[in-house]
Image 1 (cartoon, rainbow, N blue to C red):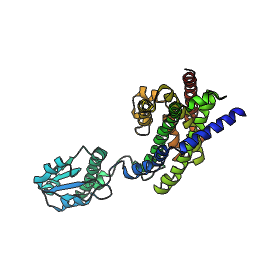
Image 2 (cartoon, helix red, strand yellow):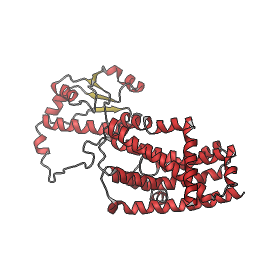
Image 3 (cartoon, helix red, strand yellow):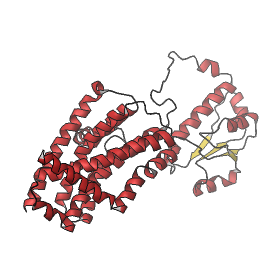
Length: 372
């Protein structure tokens, strides 16, 4: 009971210290509000409102029809453009797509020839260029086949494919991005909060005061873990309810309590990692530099930014040792697919095992740093 009382009081001390740290409080507020809403609401994965210009050298009903089939929200209404300005607007990046319809286009099409339509793409607009070019090609092909009377014949395919999008029927990229931003911010804050808390005590001499008390390294470390875990879990819950579900309107089908429990398990692993890094650093700036090469791979290679299956096989095996990989998988399964413990238990078991391993290594290193 005395040990539990020590852990409780030390944790309350951590919360009091955080309450007086205005910089970290502002960072927490920003990380779970603005940093979630702006990327999810402003970043669009796919083609949206792409700028189009059209050089019409044919001036036929067919060429005018092609200009009308490019509609919002994927494309802006095509802007008529003289042929002499084609290179200029492409060099200046004014339009993402510039379409050139040659003279006698409709006559050649009705005459059985195969006239060419030139689609110039500004490939520096990477998020829209390649998918947009494919969209334009398919839209024009369907329209030309219909106009030439071949649309019905072309539709007689031996196999009819029906595509159904589960859990996100309109393929809203912001839904997934909002949850991934929360996952990334949890990772960053879990490591930074615990690491800076330990280094702050060392720099201010508070850690030396704790060593003369009847406290063990395990009690000190558990106090830092549960206090920072409580703060991040509460911030995560508020962010999901207010920002993700309220402001962004993302329907989360899964159990919120189950997800917060999984978040606590993940924080157990990531806070232990933060303490381990803090024992290697001698100052807060050194800890920041040391944390960068650890946090960045956890964010970029965990499967949130790039699917894990598209990575090299050896890298997939390496990332299985990162707790963020399993947490990303668990987050998507629980919040979007309403997966229960019977489905996600392998990832949850792996996350718990990694957390215990990180905690044990961090505890050994923390004891060694206290003795030195």
